[in-house]
Image (cartoon, rainbow, N blue to C red; front, side):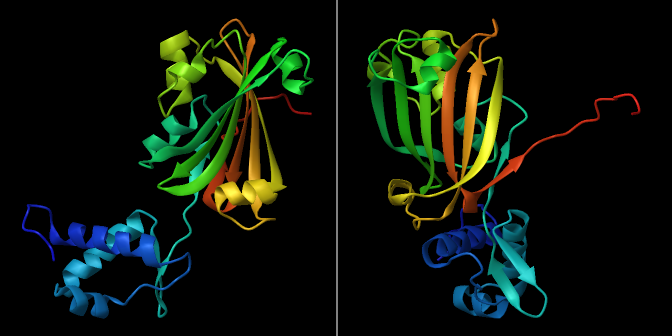
Length: 243
């Protein structure tokens, strides 16, 4: 079952257990005890224990004294303290973010839309994407631009990271941004696209991004499954005088 390829047995076993968890287990399910894994895979207890320890280090499982080893809830840490695309942020955490579907919508001059005032434009382009995290539906992304800022993007865009593409193709870089986070629940359409129940918790991250001239260049709304996400913000002492 395990190849003699120079990869330690405990790492091969770790990957085997991880594959089994992804296919057959849910959060809080108990996985087989070390003795059963030892018997099933014909490996030593030390090898099995080390494989479990590696899964613990990766926050895949958690050991509960006297109860067993359980599948741990996986939440993605989103660092809100720097500007960067979701793809760039999650790749640093060794997660695979892919696009399930993508569409482009033009919002014409005659149509009213609140983002037009934000970007001081008459005609908008909205890029709509459904994103998968490690092959699981994770987020709905809506990115709005002045249509004249990104001409023919629907014919050119072929990269997973929108921000990397904007920099390469249009020389657009974001210098600063304002972001609002709010809770919401999934409607019928959200639930269908994200493969969750209607009414499930979601988080909406609405961001207005500016270029180096402090001109608003993009508005985005990122809708993320609440059960797969946590938000990180760093607070600092502004050294205000005593009040």
